[in-house]
Length: 244
Image 1: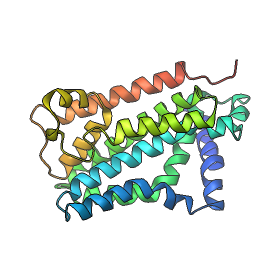
Image 2: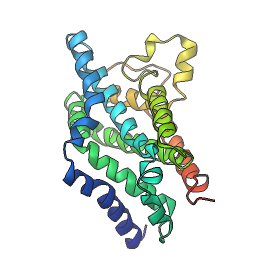
Image 3: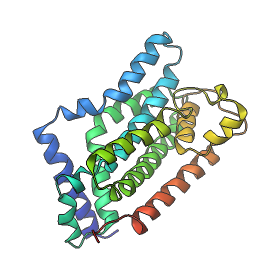
């Protein structure tokens, strides 16, 4: 990655993230409502018994939400900012990375708190690199997925509906907030095909919770890396960057 590309990424993040936050800093609070609301509900309902599951699930949900936020496509369909970068010497991946970084800025306070809680409940400080790498993998793959989907959305309404649906599919239905052992065996194998399942299992592992014998950290990382590579490739080769 050349210094010019790095400069372009930070410029895009500044224009779409920092400038917005300077005018509307309270948006950070609204972006944290969903993961923290579920964390609060699960903590109260279980009297703190499932707080580790709640932390793991809330962290995954936050990462999915901030990543898929690229799929809202308002920079493309409403503000027409994407047209400016299309006409400039900026590649789709550079633009996508800048947007992903700006969304990370929106969620930085919430992600910091959730990551701290995951580390606090962790069983060993040696698991910190595993925690951080999983956070980066899910953030990267979800951002690439959101950007790819947004490039095919012509209207803001369609984008919002699709992203909300994908969010539920990835962050609510799979065993993210609950143990995978609660699923029938057939559905467990299906859940292993979803990257957020592995992210939650890794977070659960770092916090000392029981994980299935047939699952391993290696498997979890491999699946997440495969999704990251796959969606980055799609974003690079199949995203509709320029209007025909």
